Image (tube, rainbow, N blue to C red; front, side, top):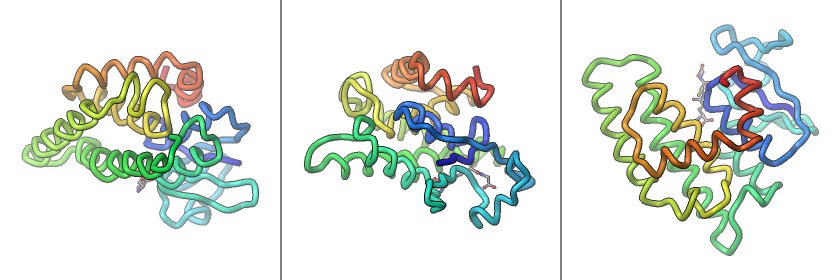
Length: 194
Ligand SMILES: N[C@@H](CCC(=O)N[C@@H](CS)C(=O)NCC(=O)O)C(=O)O
């Protein structure tokens, strides 16, 4: 299995989740401007979407989209998911919110939009972080153990920190707890972020 990633991109969520799962996997860095991988493959040939993450399974199939990859990881490594009849639904609900509401709202900060766009983005992010902060069920989103949704949220919180955004205290706690986890440290070190 191989994860195609770019340092400090959203693919860090999948990188952390794979480390947390304890899976033996390869990783290959992608130059997102040139659309070329570290070994010189044309990334567009691997996925015409041209963005990370992409996870290539051992049978050659390629999965894209954070929600799908993280769901796949949780389905195969249940310690990173949620038990119970509605477990998977709740997990997908959280992943979809982080992807379509939070991740998307953070995008303008990476591309330096107009002052108005930046102010709107900041306001939207604050509302969404507040919602997530109020939904914590313990140390993490669903209790005392992190799921793949916490891996994704953690990356969004690192971005919020990078852009100097106000983050509710409970989420600062979650971010710092995630930071101390051995699997997270490994992924951050490999991506040159520690
Ligand atoms: N819908 C995709 C979006 C992934 C995405 O935005 N990837 C960014 C990095 S965080 C990227 O690769 N951007 C480069 C590009 O689009 O050319 C997902 O959720 O996986």
